[in-house]
Length: 69
Image: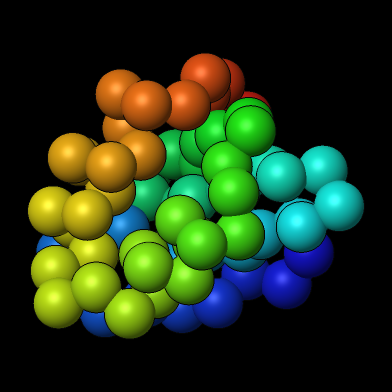
């Protein structure tokens, strides 16, 4: 998975694997993996007016996550 840099105050980069439905998000000081994320959620994240807000309201509490770094 290649990390894609994003313009955000909290998120630094994102990566998505459509085969496993795993979304990886790099924050300033950590790396998280979210499971069971559909393709459309990843695409909406990338096109959101506020990536931070979209992550908070549509991903952070909606999908299982684990800190991997």
